[in-house]
Image (cartoon, rainbow, N blue to C red; front, side, top):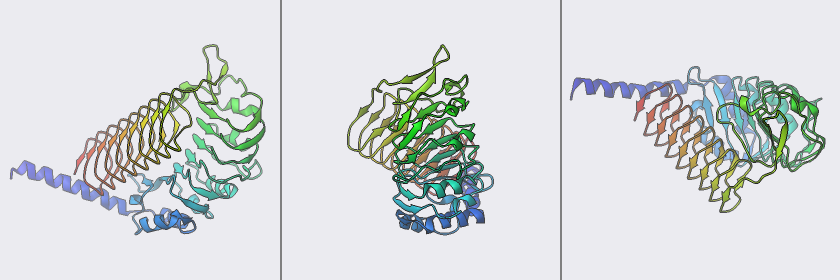
Length: 370
């Protein structure tokens, strides 16, 4: 064999080994927190505990880590049938947690959950959709914090009470979804002073008044990449005359199958069962149990969570964030941009990586791993 070919194969082999070694270095605080979280929930948590074996938590289903230090930065477990209260201070032990998605489960005790999660100082995305059936949304005397929060989704929880004052502290908020609850009272004036807010859904509540016409709030030009929304039931944006308008036009979405929902967006094509497009436009989704955020995705198969823009995902149980990734196979966790991933149980971040096979942990750029 050509010596140069041998050298390349050896480097590829070592590249596969090194990330796996790094994946074993799970921080003990994170390991303890995740075990405490799963250990006190029921039903779907039984399967989760079985999947979360060993001490390599960065390789666990639904768990994402920083490739540089091995700390847990994301936990994505939507629609896993988890039942019960989020236990004690479990997730507060995830000191570097940035993204938490526990939507479409059967969690209880929203007051306890939010009180505990406010200790996660780096938390930017919190998705708790369709939990807490009919509980009271905590008021100012209970909750403070969440100053780093960018996305908050408490939609479809049948929550009672008022829009709480503590949300006014979330100065970086871009996406706020409190739709499909039982909130009453007047829309508070401080919503108009959330300078970065570009998506607001308060629909299907019993709220009076209009969103205040502040000089800065609800400005779509300040949204993060991949966040751009039009034609939702209660979507407010700045017009050319610097005033706010309510968009009541129905989006031209095409929906077939059962239990499929487009929460907001336009030109989406959805087929299959139990799929939800939370936000975005021009997505093509088929299969079942998909949760999609962003724009221009093509998603087929089952049980994917996709956010960002311009992804193509097929197979099952993928988590895909970023943009322009192509993912197939099963149980791959992909972030970054322009990665091509196939196979199973791969964790990939960075850009322009090509990964095939299984059980790879890849970070960085321009790598070919098989």
